[in-house]
Length: 469
Image (tube, rainbow, N blue to C red; front, side, top):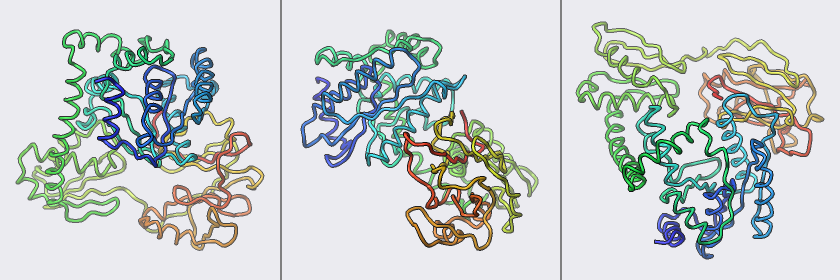
């Protein structure tokens, strides 16, 4: 079946979006994304929603300037909304450029989705990308769920990230571009063996395709079959896990040990794996298999009491017939944080490796990651220095969107169902007049404004210790 016909059928069958939705297409200028733009344009009105193009000039190649200009003119000619941002050279890290570029790119995409009320971010990942991803994850190791590769649809920002070309080979996209006169640019760095993915793309993948011309289809089938099997298995594992749970609260889990040993060894391992992933909020943990084995040893040991330290502040405690998971928290009466002043261009170190910084937005060089918390401020509206402290009894703040009136910080935390242990650890940031600017992680004040790139603004940012670059 010709690519467009297959694409149209897929859009209609899988309901990637509705005509009333709003799409942003991530376009680099390469053959993949340019074919995606063309396919979307060809969709009939009942299937094609509003869409715009988002593009990042990473400033890593001279050709990127020409590509940006072409895309700008192309979108203007086709009356397609075009949203673009530069990744300034001064902000490029010395190491980890590829990961930092991706972080910058997707942060921009999310921002554009929020600003333009987009429901979907659409990318041009294809079957070759899927095969490369599965191979790299198999070699690197990790959780079984990761071996399914790239998902067709997942949540992202305020909506969904959709990859409608994932079933098609890159050769299909080249063939379509030639048949329909789609202009595109070849990124010369795609041939550089300095990048991990390129080494798979240039050396490993061609060998596998030579061994079997149907290898792309087989990887697609493997991904789908593994996802199906995991979905069925996880239902059983979830049911078995629920049989053990005596009590579950934020930062606390208690299990009954006896039913655990009625399971076969395979189920025991998968149940513990499931429970640990739930404790860690599905964050990947390299030592998960080791922790599962250590927990089994703790429960089967001759001592009726024992303890095991786990990552991220968790502890597993055996007490006769029960196993408890507890996360280290501050006591209900938390000593006040020694108040610390904060000036522009400065980081202040906090407990457990966290930090808060204040910077002019134009000079802030680090990529903002999805797990970071931040707000924008007008320098003319805040009185320096800022002060970082824990909340105090009687604290009140005027919330964003309100010019008058205030609300108790305690009430805000209760309304958001924040556990008492976390309420007592909450940070507030005030200016020199003692007005609360930010209840960090939870609420912004009236002084928090929207980002405007053509104005001088501060970024006030909170980074947790688990951040990776």
